[in-house]
Structure formats: C-alpha cells, structure tokens
Amino acid sequence: MRIVVNGLALEVELKDTNGTPSELQKHNIRQINRSTGLGFVLYPEGFPKFQKIVKVVKTCPPNVPIVTAFTLIMVWRTNDLSPLEYLIPAVFAELAAATGFYYSKAKAENRIKLRKM
Image 1 (tube, rainbow, N blue to C red):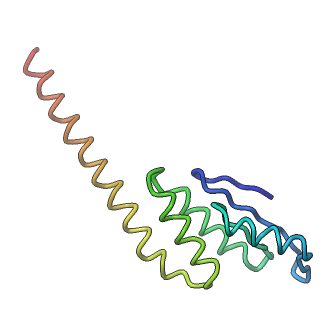
Image 2 (tube, helix red, strand yellow):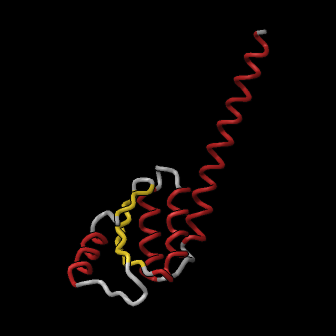
Image 3 (cartoon, helix red, strand yellow):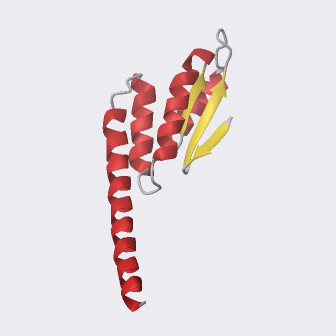
C-alpha cells in the first residue's frame, strides 16, 4: 500500500500477526528505503506507532520534508521515538514564528486602514 503524506512516500506492506514478507517484498522494501521513500512491513500491533508517524508527517510544514524523512526512518529502524522530541518542537517553533509574524503584519495593516477612514 502506498501512502503519500506531505510529499513523503510511505510504502507499507500489510501483514497479519503471523504473516511474513516474501523475499521479493523484503527486496522491494530495501530498495524503497535506499531511495527517497520509507518502506516497511506493518503488523496489527505496530499500527499505533504507524499512526504517530503519519500524524507527525502531517504536522510538518512543507519546507522540512528531508529532516522529517530522516527522522522517521531513524525512528522506524531503531524503534525509538526519542528523535520526535526534537522534530516536533522544531516544527512548531517555526510554525509559531510564522503565525506570529503574520498576525503582526495583519495588525499593522489594519491600523493603516483605520487611519485612512
């Protein structure tokens, strides 16, 4: 199954709890991970972790896909969510700065419009 979230391709091989990927599927996943995508086998017990990964990718502004992809690859390969402790604050700090700038600009423009009335 292919899922594209904010430009990041997630190639997911869905398996039952007792299922095992074929040699061809393993080969394809390795090829995907060597390229710009993220490929993995997803079992039912791993679905909550997968949901977290998709949520993080969805919250990322489009200008950080490389950092996001690298972080998610490392999270998946190491089974360690701690890199998200750095990614999520970085993304929200950038978003907060942009939002603050936008509101300051809008406020200044509104003052100018009110003076002209």
